[in-house]
Amino acid sequence: MKILFYDTKSYDKESFERTRENYPEIEIKYLKSELSPNTARLAEGYEAICAFVSSDVGTETVEVLHECGVKLILLRCAGFNNVDIKKASECGMTVLRVPGYSPEAVAEHAMALALAVNRRIHKAYVRVRENDFSLGGMQGINFYQKTAGIVGTGKIGAAMARICKGFGMKVIAYDKYPNPNLDVEYVTLDELFERSDLISLHCPLMDETYHLVNRESIKKMKDGVILVNTSRGGLVNTQDLIEGIRARKFLAVGLDVYEEEKKNVFEDRSDEIMETSITARLLSFPNVIITSHQGFFTEEALQAISETTLQNAMDYVNGVHTANEVKAS
Ligand code: NAI
Image (cartoon, rainbow, N blue to C red; front, side, top):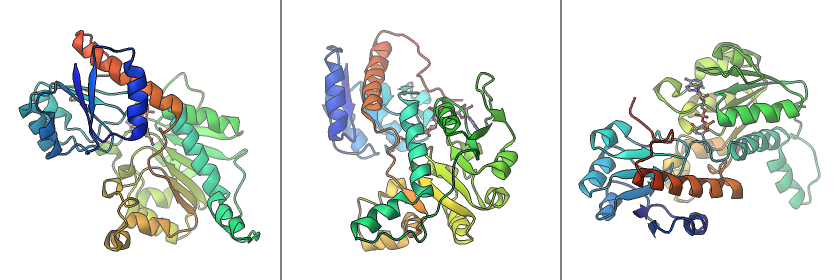
């Protein structure tokens, strides 16, 4: 099988090439270009393409890929909200993803954000480097005996619940489909907002979860709450979040994902974008930390991603149906 691999970073190529040694039937051509309707044309002659969470696999792209003869979309990520699954299915294309490559990688990053932003490690780092050892504005809270509210208790949410328990926190959770085997107290979403000292989002982005954190839900939260989002930017209404931060509702906010990720605000340094970007406005608050969608970025996770993606490709070739297939609902 020949796979056209979009948006290649050096670390992708390294881990996929290492794993490919066990899959001699697979050939990969690596492209730096992001997948979009324009670059989709490059897939002419390829049976499969490999895309990432940031790729545009919307209606138009899927149509072009179909015209080019692509039959298989391999997502080297868990989320698939960037793919027009219905269109892909109408075109007879299979979409396979990597559902749980390393839940701990993301959950540990969520806790890292919570701890760092609570104790203002980002500010301390800069201050001490400038020979300023003052403590003003650095006060945080203990996590011990506080309440953590986990929204979405799938693989990552469950890992986050275990980590929070390790800190001696009480863990409450909301999930549309509660897991009876998980040792947490399930509550309604409203109750979670009302009772939590730390809220961590781990549910997928769908119509019903879009802007789950908004003006109304923020009002229900405790004053001095810490919010962490490592799931998808669209779960939080950024304008409403900024309003809440200005009103001093939040002790701290840690975001690995944000609504404007597509604009690549950090790579494009044009003044125009920095001025208008609401992400840049978020960055102006001292109690906010933003990381660049790096929750997944550990050695173990990259290895698991390449192994599952190439196994998905071989399962497709061999006609093996797996739970990694994303189907139109
Ligand atoms: P998962 O599929 O194991 O768990 C998702 C959970 O959300 C399930 O328990 C499901 O029942 C629940 N859920 C579904 N609809 C819901 C609703 N309306 N309200 C509340 N809960 C609902 O997924 P996993 O592996 O735990 O990943 C969670 C999310 O993390 C992904 O959707 C993805 O957006 C994000 N992610 C972020 C990464 C990063 O690098 N920052 C890397 C990987 C995933």
